[in-house]
Length: 220
Image (cartoon, rainbow, N blue to C red):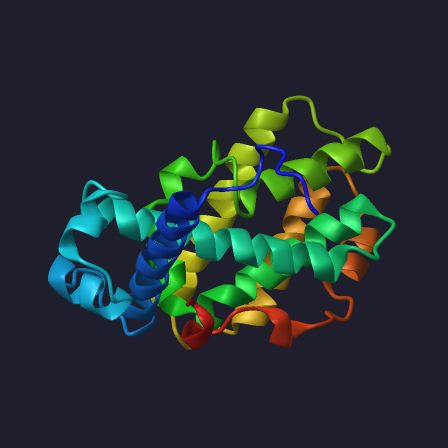
């Protein structure tokens, strides 16, 4: 007979977690449809929860949608971890992740636009893709691959490049998103201290697993 250790979630806690997850999933479904301001009643109906349950978890619709974006970005970050997990070079891991995120703007435009809207908070984000980029850059510095004097300032530049790239691709839909992402990656690698020829080689190397990136319909 199993002994309860006190660490298992209670039935109430499990129910609350399911309710919150249902609300986040519903918000992501609205995002996928391009609806960023649906009435809260519609959200709760889509999640199959009561109106009161909404306010047990979120103070406003905006707070829910921020949570939905954070959840989607965290799942994106987890997918990137899988795709770069076999790379022994942290410089290549950083480059591959940046190139894949650059392609996200066309694959999931609503998520991309939500990311751009909340972009100023990305540098200090504790979940999602930003801490993974910080991790990879830090590992590349320790391995002698990158030359960075101030990691915080470097992250500001990298985050700004990612956001500006996304905005450019939205403003210019005819621009080749893959070519643009790879060129920005190459420029960042050179800024981080790699020789020009190596930066070009890494930024133009084949990318695996593009189908593992979320499309718009996969936000929920």
